[in-house]
Length: 107
Image 1 (cartoon, rainbow, N blue to C red):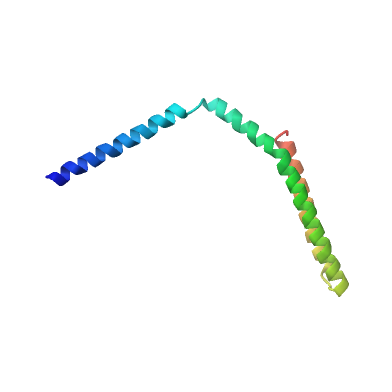
Image 2: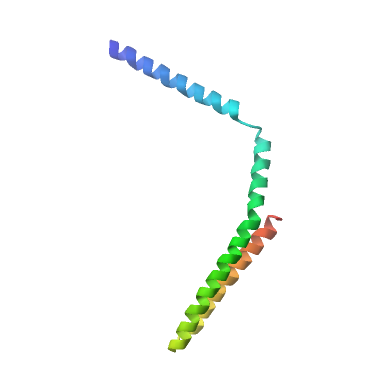
């Protein structure tokens, strides 16, 4: 009988802890609209840095691609044209994605 009694005490303590946790969440919670607006402003503030980062990554990819193309061209490889197209496409994609994201979100 004592084991059933201690099981009830444990269930009661867990329920009390859950209730206190929910109360803390409600007390420290903020207005939903204010939170959404704050998140919107924070995300928009990162867009400038994010697009600049994408431009920098595009520049690094272009430099690495130029070195690879030069090495293949110097060695006389036949698939130099495919490598040029792939690296050029990757650079254009990064620049276009950064520009489209900036335009889409109006930043």
